[in-house]
Length: 168
Length: 168
Image (cartoon, rainbow over all chains, first blue to last red):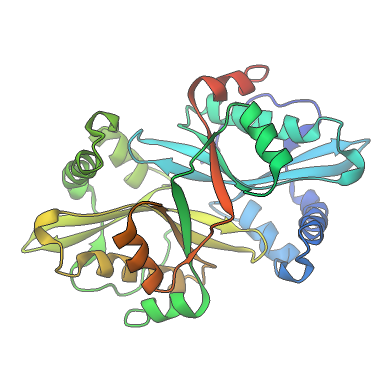
């Protein structure tokens, strides 16, 4: 089922298969920026299958600057039980340092907001690091509400395997 | 595309269309418990379409006690960019008060962990209220790691419409 896509800002478009190498490059740039270069295990083949295989669960927008892919937003769909509506969860937003200040980051956020509104989604969410004050200021200036009472908990690796053990 | 389902604990099974009225009942019970009875807007028709329509993005397990649906887990799929793998995000976990202590909550968590392991997902996540100490203790006892540095930010309603405005 193809999900509807509204008109987007001029620099922004949904990622195409040909963008996978650029997306991998930007994912690695982001990990370097966050000083976790070794954390990137995703391969071009995995990303291509996730974004463009049957029944995709992951989506990407790219931002172009001077005919080059200089930014990206990777997102998936979440859900509000009480509203009975889907939503957008922005997993990664990244714009190359050399094109910061040109508005690509805001255009990516506007695009995701436009997708949410066009599809009658309940919400648009993303996580922010508590010490990233410029990001917190920017997002709260846009009207984003911090869900301060909630902490996400994660099971992975050995702890996940241990709990699954009787059944997996 | 049908997603593979491992063997589950005896009391747990994927929700079927016939469970929708019970799921709506449990969603309302949960909202009452959280003292937000008026927050529930979802209808049986919406839930049925989301869970069982074409290309579902939302999934549910039910827990049975004495042939009655007494618990539920509503989840969707999230994504780890660095791992290049999908994951499970548990949106709502609820067990009716009269069957608490019978292990249904843990069996639902074990089931989601087993699904994650069987599908080679990266992680299994959910959000916990910071003041819910019994829940925090229980989840951390299972090995769940709190993502304490991150705060989810949400755009919805007027703020979302405002940002989307030039394009939606």
